[in-house]
Image (cartoon, rainbow, N blue to C red; front, side):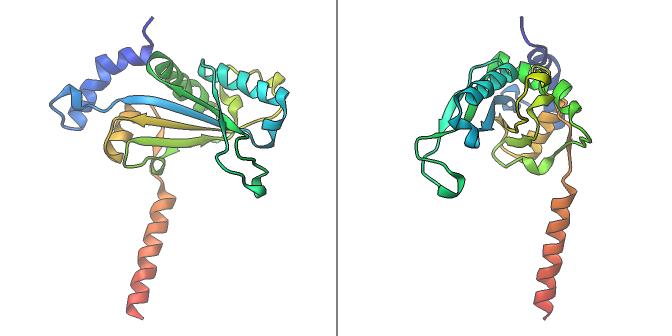
Length: 201
């Protein structure tokens, strides 16, 4: 069965984006290419039981078995050894990707306490939108009673977009709650004022 969001993209979102972005060719319409989910392990990587629990959790959240990433070099401050386990990574494409996005946007994110939205500054000019989730228990697949420790995960939405504006417009069509990062704008304004004051001196 075709995921709901995949059908919606073909039947509604493509047309909406062509109008909003003034595109004439459907092939020029941006789309979500893949979703990458990472979970850092830290010291927990040394414990086999905890590692197995993390693998089960990330598998339940994504519907796909993760790969274990390794440290490329040793860093004493982080107690990391070259070749040691660093974290878990899952790359979702096609149907699983659409199913994950659907659950993420409509079920998981609304469960975050005092959630106001995802900041548009999380988007880069290459079509990637990255953000962190502090508590993996927001996903309904995780049984809170069986969780030994609350962990954070990082999510990167990779799109075929070539600009920040197009990426944000695309993700908003998928109901991503994206808001303007006013704090970043304030910092920019302060920086400009400081530079102007230096020039005057």
